[in-house]
Image 1 (cartoon, rainbow, N blue to C red):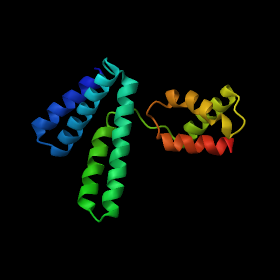
Image 2 (spheres, helix red, strand yellow):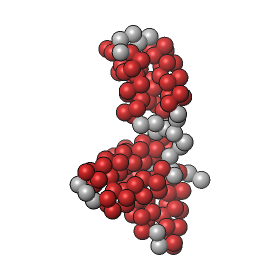
Image 3 (cartoon, rainbow, N blue to C red):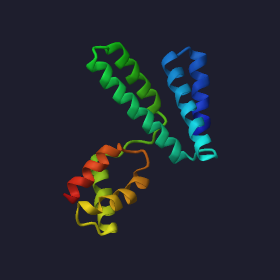
Length: 147
């Protein structure tokens, strides 16, 4: 079953189970996917859907951090619950060791030798990573390798 349809089915299930957190998170995801669809004027492919989900997860992490800083632990917990719902639709995350190996391969493929070449390495690497790792982590590993 296509990922888009899995999200829709999960929403129907959350509504039947009266799971408000899952329902809210999945409705938000479907809205973001519809916005993406209008933006690119076609149905998003799986990698684009993963990117949308990754962006939403990142937003939720940032929101949870802000809520904790503001003393609103209950809202931070709600954001973290939504993160768990959304992460069910992402592929398994890469380990640091796997990422380091991919960074090494991308650096050797691109012939990068200094920080000036970071853009070339990231351009090669990010499509391979495809939502299976946080861009900040990948960026940091590339910086460490080139720096």
